[in-house]
Every structure is written in structure tokens, then in C-alpha cells.
Length: 406
Image 1 (spheres, helix red, strand yellow):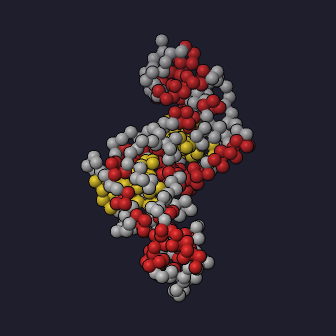
Image 2 (cartoon, helix red, strand yellow):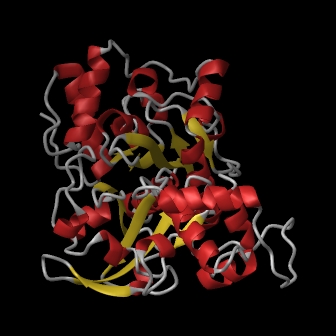
Image 3 (spheres, one colour):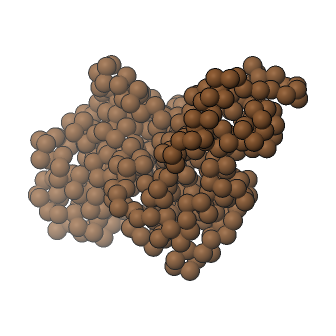
């Protein structure tokens, strides 16, 4: 009788694999539950572990659709892809991004002479779903939504036993799986904690995606150290104008002592979770941090910002009302706005629009709040756009756009 007491983990996996596929003996304690369940699913699909695996792309139309539907995800990936490529440059690893179904929509460059599978597999449109390529880390994550690693013979297909991969999920503001980030090595096992590295970059991409999807949400960043506010470890949550928490990332859930997984629904009110009202949070400047005591007793550093519908990031200033603070932008005046300091006035029609805005009921959105505050400030300044811009500390171009409905 063969023994499971081999000198290496690879030997133990090989024997457990043989016994499972040939004799039906469960590989308990040798491979992870995620890998075992993937093997079982592949067998139910009548896949053959001895068959030669081919990494085939989906149809051109489906690949193009995947690229179009996941534009924000790809933008978030591209913001980190250069750094990730440099980090992995001296290793034997490459990285790739798939959509929720497992279709590849981005990959770092492949430049190692010994690689045979990677250049073929890392093509736009290649399908990494379990149904297409059997057990792989990105396939497991696409199926389960949970981080996974698959080493060597843990792959379902014998033809890719020299591959090693680790993958992590990326979620959207609804808590749904938005994509999968994978790191793989061909022919050489990982000599570092690949799961930690891929998890870190997946968090970075996810945070960028969450922010880009949050039009007219107050984005709250908080952490126990101010140095962590602009890192993948930042705790993020999106808050609407009614003070409802619309979404939060896993880091925020963990720091608050709440479950990080699941759909983004019923997350509560910000004054209940953070014990701080919307106006109080909206008074925190983007360039500085305020201190906040969480309900669990932790003291954290907080910074807030607004991602407006026009894509501009708006930072909230200390000591201002939420309406006034929403106007403090980090942009320069547009080129078509004169740079001189001569008084600029709005037209009679604009005055009529402004008066209507002043007499309107409570603003229904942050954009309405912008227009309302600009209208009141312009009236106080006698229609002088330059004076109003100086008082609000925003560009004159912003005032023109808001008064003209832009």
C-alpha cells in the first residue's frame, strides 16, 4: 500500500490526485476544499483530466462586449498595471485580469523565454471559466467569489501541472463580483506569498473601481494610521445625501467588526455606524485628516471626497457647510475663461435662473446643492463671477458650467 508520507507536498498531491481520479478516494487534508470541489465540478461536466488543455478565446463579439462592459474595471486595472508589471518584473510571474465570467480583459507583458503556455493563455478574450479550462485559481474565484490558489498538480488538467496561480476577487459597489485578478508562474513555484500580493493589488483595483462607480456619493476614507489612507488597505465607504451607507469595502467592514462579504444592502446610516452625521463628515478636507472614534472604540483618521457625475473629484473643506464644501474642486480654470481679474457678471437670463434657484425648495441632489449655493453667492456679490469664485474658492469656469446647467 502506498503511503501519503512523501517528502514533498507535490508528491502528496500527485498521489492524492491519482487515488481520487482512479479510485474515487477523497483527497482530504491534501488539497484545499476549494480545489477538491472544483475537481468534482469538472468531473460532473465530463471533463477528462488527461486531455490536452487549449486556452481558447471566446468569440470576437463576446470579447469586445467584455471590454466595453468592463471599461471602469479596466481603467482601474490600468492605473495599477504598470506598477504591478514592474513589481513582478524580476520574478517568474505575470498577472492578468478577467471579467466576472472568467474572460480575460487585461494582462501584463510576457517576456520569459521558457514560457510556452503563458503567451497563449494571456490573450484578450481567453476563457478561464471552469467549464472551459478546468481547475485554475481564476476559474475558482469566478465560480465562488473567494480568493484561491492552485499549485502544480492541483490543476485539473495534467497538461498544465507545471503552472502555479493565485487569484483574488474584485467587487463593485453592489457587492457583486466585478472581476478576478490572477498571478501565475510557469514552471517555477512561487517563492513568495503570492496570495498576499495578489490580494493587495486586487484591493487597490477594487478601491479605484468603487470610487469611479460612486457618482454623487460622499466617499469616506478612514484607517488607524493616516499613512494608510491612500493605500490598498484604506477603509472606504460611500454615503448618499440621505446619510445612508450605499457601499463599503472589505477593509471598512473588518475595521468596523462586521462581515466583509455579501451584497451591499442594509448597511445602515452613517450616523449609526460612524457616529458622525453627513454634514460633519462633509466638513473634512481632502488634503488633511480629522480624527473619529468608532463605536468599537478605535480612533481613526478620516478624509472625505465627492466623486461628481462629471468625473471631477471634489474635496470637502473644514469648517464649511456640506453644500459649500461640495464646490471646492481641485481643477484649474478652463482655458476659455479669461485669467485677468476684471469683474465678470452674469447675464440677465442667468440672473433669472439664479433667482429661480434661490426660491426653489431644498436641493434634491449634490448637483442641485451646487447650483443653489452658487446662486446665493452670486446674488451676494451682485452678479460678479470673479468675486463669487474667490469667495467660494473655486474656478470661474465651474460657476459658468453650473449656472448654464453643465
